[in-house]
Amino acid sequence: MPTINQLSALDSVAAGDSVPVYAPAQGDARRASFTVITEFLATAFTSVTISSYIKVTPVAFASLPSAVTAGAGARAFITDCNATTFNTAAAAGGANLVPVFSDGTVWRIG
Image 1: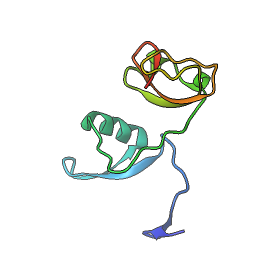
Image 2: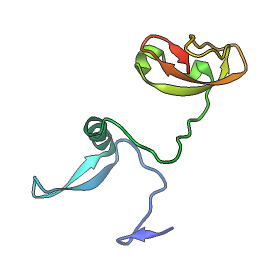
Image 3: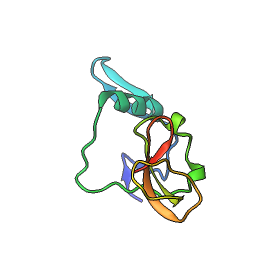
């Protein structure tokens, strides 16, 4: 495994872990948790452009959070949808693999 500054590479990190961050406005280096960094990135960047593709792991409908909790615009890919018609409410009970999105109330096919 490669080393950086004589430290071995990590195999995993957790949300509570911290990384050093140089803060010129503060005049020094500080620690920031991955949670803080993620929150900053979510507010600082409103869109993402990807030049290749995004891979979403297919899951069973029952493992999705509620569409209300996920919020409007959330997307997923399910393995057991009962239908395939675009923009209809998704539900378990079939063998259809379909992308779904939350409208803020229900998961819809599409």
